[in-house]
Length: 430
Image (cartoon, rainbow, N blue to C red; front, side, top):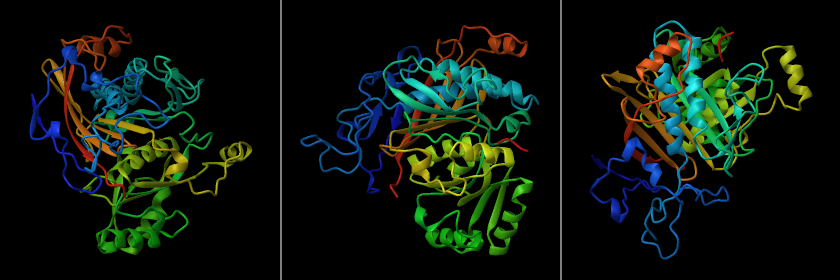
């Protein structure tokens, strides 16, 4: 297999390390292992030495050359996390259009937890499927991983778009974010928040949840060098957004409504050539934290403000010390730059293509990001059922799941190819 590679440095100029010039041959790894298997799994150091360094050390072959330093390739945890979202997508994708959102969600949760426990880390679920008494797996506070000395916070949404999947609609994804222990915001009892997300071309300080809708749209239009009439606002299609829709229309902006899946929607605003420019409105707080991790990796920004649904939720939040008037920025939602994100498409969408099943296997489309290096990778993976792997379940096991049982053996194989780029520095219905 051959792969043409192109690396974009922070200056925007194309640059390639000497050993990546031209077309390179990539060996097919045994038993479907990803290339990350060649990395030093013991080289992770959240003190600042994890993964690929942002600047070349003195005397290295890359000194003075813009872009990442590949002279000492270390572990990039995001490349392991993509197998987690792939497994969840492959399991839940088989429920597309079958009308059972709970079964689709359970399939994603079961497989995501299974693969997460194979990752070398000491993880704690901060954003999960609910409290311990509400969710049997991936509940808030659950410890995940093999327990090795790598303390991290984990935020998961095994299936963002359960209704989308059940109804066979576009935009469902499986997502996970991970950061250094104590870095991710705990939403506590408040499950919804006001959100404002923009891409890297819009300076974060020019927009604010304290501004009017018209002021924010003017700032976005100015930054993108186009009239407000050409600015597209993304928001969830909810009755609570009736006034927001009115204000956007009065300002002259275009509007795109989505039924579910605002994690993918938030990421869309930071994607080059995306059909939307800004995301506004009220959505899930857990999804907001996960989206903030992704946008931080891409150079975009997200602001949030907790939005209690009722007086009881408000009272609990105040008792626990939450400031309901505070505007939370990206660094409040996910601190530091030791942040990783991965997502795999379940059904087709603007961000990712959904799972494709074929005779003897399937293919998945994923996005993988790392904040410290600014890398954003799109990965296409081909899975073969007859080869052993943790990333998928064969058809016969899926049939057992449908019948109410769950077998323990998993087979499958993934062979991945991807294109890597460097980003510019710049809840459910109720």
